[in-house]
Amino acid sequence: MTPRTPYRLLAIFGVPMAIALVTTAGLISALLDDGVVDAVSWAALSVPVLTAVWSWRKRKR
Image (cartoon, rainbow, N blue to C red; front, side, top):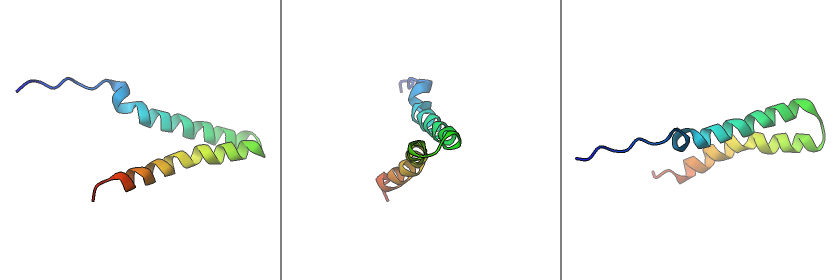
């Protein structure tokens, strides 16, 4: 048996870090202003929910 090569940290934590950054930007923008910025914050805060729904639908049952 050959040893497996380890994954790079970015390959493991890249997507969760991107989701965390988008969510943090959405939370900060929700605190800063009203109007169009609220729409940006709603879009940014919907990313984790949509990702969870997409992952759940993609999973084999």
